Amino acid sequence: MRGFSPSDAALEGFQVLRQHWRVVVGWAGFAFVAVIAMVVVTVIVAVPMQLLAGGPESNDAVTVASIIWPLGMIGVMALTVSALFRLMLRSEQPEFLYLRIGADELRILAVLLALGLCKVLILWAGAGLVAVAAKGGMAVTILIGVILILSFFALAARFGLAPVMTFADRRLRLAAAWRLGRGHTVQLAGMALLAFCLVAFMAGASWVGLFLLGGVLTGFQDLSLSGVASLEAHPGRVLFQVVTEMMLIPVFLVLLLAPWVAAYRALSADPA
Image (cartoon, rainbow, N blue to C red):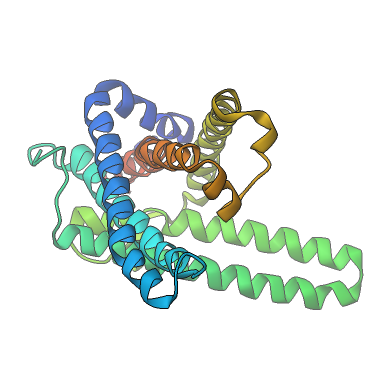
Protein backbone atom coordinates (compact mmCIF):
# COMPACT_ATOMS: atom_id res chain seq x y z
CA MET A 1 0.00 0.00 0.00
CA ARG A 2 1.41 3.36 -0.98
CA GLY A 3 1.93 5.69 1.97
CA PHE A 4 -0.35 8.70 2.30
CA SER A 5 0.93 11.45 4.56
CA PRO A 6 -1.84 13.89 5.59
CA SER A 7 0.70 16.50 6.70
CA ASP A 8 2.62 16.37 3.41
CA ALA A 9 -0.60 16.55 1.41
CA ALA A 10 -1.88 19.49 3.49
CA LEU A 11 1.22 21.49 2.51
CA GLU A 12 0.87 20.73 -1.20
CA GLY A 13 -0.73 24.13 -1.78
CA PHE A 14 2.45 25.90 -0.69
CA GLN A 15 4.42 23.83 -3.19
CA VAL A 16 2.05 24.95 -5.95
CA LEU A 17 2.42 28.58 -4.86
CA ARG A 18 6.20 28.26 -4.86
CA GLN A 19 6.48 26.54 -8.23
CA HIS A 20 3.67 28.33 -10.09
CA TRP A 21 3.37 31.69 -8.36
CA ARG A 22 3.15 33.51 -11.70
CA VAL A 23 0.07 31.49 -12.63
CA VAL A 24 -1.53 32.19 -9.24
CA VAL A 25 -0.82 35.90 -9.68
CA GLY A 26 -2.51 35.62 -13.07
CA TRP A 27 -5.57 34.07 -11.41
CA ALA A 28 -5.60 36.98 -8.95
CA GLY A 29 -5.54 39.35 -11.92
CA PHE A 30 -8.42 37.43 -13.45
CA ALA A 31 -10.36 37.85 -10.19
CA PHE A 32 -9.62 41.60 -10.32
CA VAL A 33 -10.98 41.84 -13.86
CA ALA A 34 -14.03 39.86 -12.76
CA VAL A 35 -14.69 42.35 -9.94
CA ILE A 36 -14.50 45.26 -12.37
CA ALA A 37 -16.87 43.45 -14.73
CA MET A 38 -19.34 42.83 -11.89
CA VAL A 39 -19.21 46.50 -10.90
CA VAL A 40 -19.88 47.57 -14.49
CA VAL A 41 -22.76 45.12 -14.90
CA THR A 42 -24.26 46.21 -11.58
CA VAL A 43 -24.12 49.86 -12.60
CA ILE A 44 -25.53 49.21 -16.07
CA VAL A 45 -28.44 47.21 -14.69
CA ALA A 46 -29.11 49.12 -11.46
CA VAL A 47 -28.97 52.74 -12.63
CA PRO A 48 -31.90 52.49 -15.09
CA MET A 49 -33.87 50.55 -12.50
CA GLN A 50 -33.28 53.26 -9.91
CA LEU A 51 -34.33 55.99 -12.33
CA LEU A 52 -37.53 54.13 -13.16
CA ALA A 53 -38.20 53.41 -9.48
CA GLY A 54 -37.99 57.03 -8.41
CA GLY A 55 -34.44 58.02 -7.68
CA PRO A 56 -31.59 57.20 -5.30
CA GLU A 57 -33.98 56.21 -2.48
CA SER A 58 -34.67 52.96 -4.32
CA ASN A 59 -32.94 49.78 -3.11
CA ASP A 60 -32.73 48.30 -6.61
CA ALA A 61 -28.95 48.69 -6.70
CA VAL A 62 -28.57 46.62 -3.55
CA THR A 63 -30.96 44.00 -4.93
CA VAL A 64 -29.08 43.76 -8.22
CA ALA A 65 -25.72 43.55 -6.46
CA SER A 66 -27.01 40.83 -4.13
CA ILE A 67 -27.80 38.74 -7.23
CA ILE A 68 -24.85 39.54 -9.49
CA TRP A 69 -22.04 39.36 -6.93
CA PRO A 70 -22.75 35.88 -5.50
CA LEU A 71 -23.18 34.49 -9.01
CA GLY A 72 -19.99 36.18 -10.13
CA MET A 73 -18.02 34.86 -7.17
CA ILE A 74 -19.30 31.32 -7.76
CA GLY A 75 -18.27 31.59 -11.41
CA VAL A 76 -14.79 32.85 -10.52
CA MET A 77 -14.35 30.04 -8.01
CA ALA A 78 -15.47 27.36 -10.49
CA LEU A 79 -13.08 28.64 -13.17
CA THR A 80 -10.19 28.94 -10.73
CA VAL A 81 -10.76 25.47 -9.26
CA SER A 82 -10.83 23.94 -12.73
CA ALA A 83 -7.66 25.84 -13.66
CA LEU A 84 -5.92 24.54 -10.53
CA PHE A 85 -6.90 20.95 -11.32
CA ARG A 86 -5.82 21.41 -14.93
CA LEU A 87 -2.46 22.76 -13.76
CA MET A 88 -1.86 19.81 -11.44
CA LEU A 89 -3.40 17.00 -13.52
CA ARG A 90 -3.18 18.13 -17.16
CA SER A 91 -0.21 20.45 -17.28
CA GLU A 92 0.13 19.75 -21.01
CA GLN A 93 -3.04 21.84 -21.55
CA PRO A 94 -1.92 25.29 -20.33
CA GLU A 95 -4.52 27.28 -22.30
CA PHE A 96 -4.48 30.87 -20.94
CA LEU A 97 -3.34 30.51 -17.32
CA TYR A 98 -5.06 27.10 -17.50
CA LEU A 99 -8.38 28.95 -17.58
CA ARG A 100 -11.15 27.76 -19.85
CA ILE A 101 -14.93 27.77 -20.07
CA GLY A 102 -16.19 24.35 -21.04
CA ALA A 103 -17.61 21.05 -19.89
CA ASP A 104 -14.99 20.63 -17.17
CA GLU A 105 -16.03 23.90 -15.57
CA LEU A 106 -19.72 23.00 -15.74
CA ARG A 107 -19.07 19.66 -14.07
CA ILE A 108 -16.97 21.29 -11.35
CA LEU A 109 -19.74 23.85 -10.77
CA ALA A 110 -22.33 21.07 -10.57
CA VAL A 111 -20.37 18.98 -8.06
CA LEU A 112 -19.52 22.02 -5.91
CA LEU A 113 -23.17 23.06 -5.80
CA ALA A 114 -24.24 19.49 -5.02
CA LEU A 115 -21.74 19.20 -2.16
CA GLY A 116 -22.71 22.64 -0.85
CA LEU A 117 -26.39 21.69 -0.87
CA CYS A 118 -25.65 18.43 0.94
CA LYS A 119 -23.69 20.27 3.63
CA VAL A 120 -26.54 22.75 4.12
CA LEU A 121 -29.06 19.91 4.46
CA ILE A 122 -26.82 18.04 6.90
CA LEU A 123 -26.33 21.14 9.03
CA TRP A 124 -30.06 21.85 8.97
CA ALA A 125 -30.88 18.29 10.01
CA GLY A 126 -28.17 18.39 12.66
CA ALA A 127 -29.55 21.61 14.13
CA GLY A 128 -32.96 19.95 14.35
CA LEU A 129 -31.53 16.90 16.14
CA VAL A 130 -29.66 19.11 18.61
CA ALA A 131 -32.85 21.05 19.32
CA VAL A 132 -34.68 17.79 20.03
CA ALA A 133 -31.79 16.42 22.11
CA ALA A 134 -31.76 19.61 24.20
CA LYS A 135 -34.96 18.41 25.84
CA GLY A 136 -33.05 15.43 27.25
CA GLY A 137 -30.51 17.49 29.14
CA MET A 138 -27.07 19.04 28.65
CA ALA A 139 -25.17 15.73 28.57
CA VAL A 140 -27.36 14.29 25.81
CA THR A 141 -27.10 17.54 23.83
CA ILE A 142 -23.30 17.56 24.00
CA LEU A 143 -23.09 13.89 23.03
CA ILE A 144 -25.37 14.36 20.04
CA GLY A 145 -23.46 17.49 19.04
CA VAL A 146 -20.10 15.70 19.15
CA ILE A 147 -21.47 12.78 17.12
CA LEU A 148 -22.91 15.15 14.51
CA ILE A 149 -19.67 17.12 14.21
CA LEU A 150 -17.60 13.95 13.78
CA SER A 151 -20.11 12.58 11.26
CA PHE A 152 -20.03 15.84 9.29
CA PHE A 153 -16.23 15.81 9.08
CA ALA A 154 -16.24 12.12 8.10
CA LEU A 155 -18.74 12.71 5.29
CA ALA A 156 -16.87 15.82 4.11
CA ALA A 157 -13.62 13.84 4.06
CA ARG A 158 -15.11 10.95 2.10
CA PHE A 159 -16.73 13.21 -0.49
CA GLY A 160 -13.87 15.73 -0.59
CA LEU A 161 -12.22 13.84 -3.43
CA ALA A 162 -15.31 14.24 -5.65
CA PRO A 163 -14.31 17.53 -7.37
CA VAL A 164 -10.83 16.24 -8.22
CA MET A 165 -12.13 12.91 -9.50
CA THR A 166 -14.89 14.64 -11.45
CA PHE A 167 -12.30 16.72 -13.25
CA ALA A 168 -9.88 13.84 -13.77
CA ASP A 169 -12.47 11.39 -15.11
CA ARG A 170 -14.60 13.99 -16.94
CA ARG A 171 -17.84 12.86 -15.27
CA LEU A 172 -19.53 13.24 -11.90
CA ARG A 173 -17.82 10.94 -9.40
CA LEU A 174 -19.56 11.30 -6.04
CA ALA A 175 -19.97 7.55 -5.44
CA ALA A 176 -16.46 6.79 -6.73
CA ALA A 177 -15.00 9.40 -4.38
CA TRP A 178 -16.75 7.73 -1.47
CA ARG A 179 -15.24 4.36 -2.42
CA LEU A 180 -11.74 5.74 -2.98
CA GLY A 181 -11.67 7.31 0.47
CA ARG A 182 -12.63 4.07 2.22
CA GLY A 183 -10.10 3.27 4.94
CA HIS A 184 -8.58 6.77 4.80
CA THR A 185 -11.33 8.84 6.42
CA VAL A 186 -9.26 9.91 9.42
CA GLN A 187 -6.26 10.77 7.25
CA LEU A 188 -8.34 12.82 4.82
CA ALA A 189 -10.12 14.62 7.64
CA GLY A 190 -6.81 15.41 9.34
CA MET A 191 -5.37 16.71 6.07
CA ALA A 192 -8.40 18.91 5.43
CA LEU A 193 -8.40 20.23 9.00
CA LEU A 194 -4.70 21.13 8.86
CA ALA A 195 -5.11 22.88 5.51
CA PHE A 196 -8.17 24.75 6.81
CA CYS A 197 -6.29 25.94 9.91
CA LEU A 198 -3.44 27.25 7.76
CA VAL A 199 -5.86 29.11 5.49
CA ALA A 200 -7.82 30.44 8.48
CA PHE A 201 -4.60 31.83 9.97
CA MET A 202 -3.63 33.49 6.68
CA ALA A 203 -7.17 34.85 6.18
CA GLY A 204 -7.15 36.30 9.69
CA ALA A 205 -3.78 37.94 9.12
CA SER A 206 -5.03 39.36 5.81
CA TRP A 207 -8.17 40.73 7.47
CA VAL A 208 -6.12 42.42 10.19
CA GLY A 209 -3.86 43.93 7.54
CA LEU A 210 -6.82 45.29 5.57
CA PHE A 211 -8.40 46.61 8.78
CA LEU A 212 -5.26 48.52 9.74
CA LEU A 213 -4.70 49.80 6.22
CA GLY A 214 -8.31 50.98 6.00
CA GLY A 215 -7.92 52.76 9.32
CA VAL A 216 -4.72 54.49 8.21
CA LEU A 217 -6.23 55.63 4.91
CA THR A 218 -9.76 56.63 5.97
CA GLY A 219 -9.69 56.96 9.74
CA PHE A 220 -10.34 54.42 12.46
CA GLN A 221 -13.45 56.22 13.69
CA ASP A 222 -15.49 54.99 10.70
CA LEU A 223 -14.34 51.38 10.68
CA SER A 224 -17.41 50.37 12.70
CA LEU A 225 -19.66 51.24 9.76
CA SER A 226 -20.95 48.34 7.71
CA GLY A 227 -23.20 47.61 4.78
CA VAL A 228 -24.78 50.53 2.94
CA ALA A 229 -23.53 53.08 5.48
CA SER A 230 -19.90 52.07 4.90
CA LEU A 231 -20.39 52.10 1.13
CA GLU A 232 -21.88 55.60 1.22
CA ALA A 233 -19.21 56.97 3.57
CA HIS A 234 -16.13 55.39 1.97
CA PRO A 235 -16.90 53.77 -1.40
CA GLY A 236 -13.23 53.64 -2.31
CA ARG A 237 -12.34 51.73 0.85
CA VAL A 238 -15.16 49.23 0.37
CA LEU A 239 -14.19 48.65 -3.26
CA PHE A 240 -10.53 48.23 -2.27
CA GLN A 241 -11.47 45.65 0.37
CA VAL A 242 -13.71 43.73 -2.01
CA VAL A 243 -11.10 43.70 -4.77
CA THR A 244 -8.34 42.62 -2.39
CA GLU A 245 -10.46 39.83 -0.92
CA MET A 246 -11.42 38.62 -4.39
CA MET A 247 -7.77 38.60 -5.47
CA LEU A 248 -6.88 36.51 -2.41
CA ILE A 249 -9.51 33.88 -3.25
CA PRO A 250 -7.24 32.06 -5.77
CA VAL A 251 -4.49 31.81 -3.13
CA PHE A 252 -6.86 30.36 -0.55
CA LEU A 253 -8.35 27.96 -3.10
CA VAL A 254 -4.88 26.66 -3.97
CA LEU A 255 -4.07 26.09 -0.30
CA LEU A 256 -7.41 24.36 0.34
CA LEU A 257 -7.78 22.22 -2.79
CA ALA A 258 -4.23 21.31 -3.82
CA PRO A 259 -4.05 18.87 -0.86
CA TRP A 260 -7.03 16.97 -2.29
CA VAL A 261 -5.21 16.59 -5.60
CA ALA A 262 -2.19 15.22 -3.75
CA ALA A 263 -4.45 12.83 -1.83
CA TYR A 264 -6.14 11.71 -5.06
CA ARG A 265 -2.77 11.01 -6.67
CA ALA A 266 -1.62 8.96 -3.69
CA LEU A 267 -4.82 6.98 -3.25
CA SER A 268 -5.50 6.38 -6.94
CA ALA A 269 -1.98 4.97 -7.30
CA ASP A 270 -2.52 2.70 -4.30
CA PRO A 271 -2.59 -0.92 -5.58
CA ALA A 272 -4.81 -1.91 -2.66
